[in-house]
Length: 192
Figure (cartoon, one colour):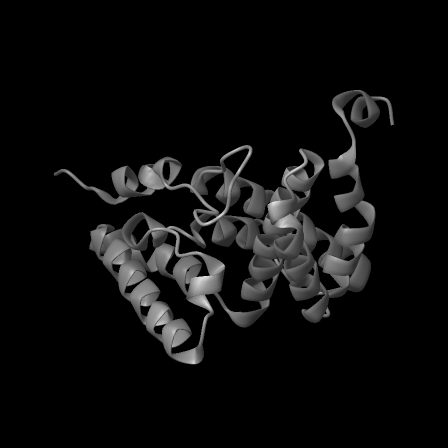
């Protein structure tokens, strides 16, 4: 029997992020998702190893892989629109939840309970995924700024402010220890 779930997820590569901004290098939802999963995994490891937080880094990483899958149905609504006011924010959350429900319905019923937690994570896992999502945005903004695209200046400040507002010790570590290296070229990175 044919199942469309993964065919839908693989459409993430066709969704471009940052639609209202001039990008010198476009970013697909697939790229963003992979980077978010890498970062979420690291944040959870930092939290576990350095701060004694009881969190499963693998669970966090897999949850991050699913965090924007609803956008294969909704598209990527730009942040300034999504958070313009409480009414729009609330309406979008409803649309996003309906899209996630639709995706879950595509999964064969006997497998669905294994996927559901990735769409509705507990608060602890969710906070690391949210932080990773913000880091992915910050890194994208800084990359655009390094290419001379000043249009990403305000977005970079906003992303960094959002990360700091989370008051997440692991995020503070990632910001200090890992983010600065994104300004290095290949030679500097390899010859550290």
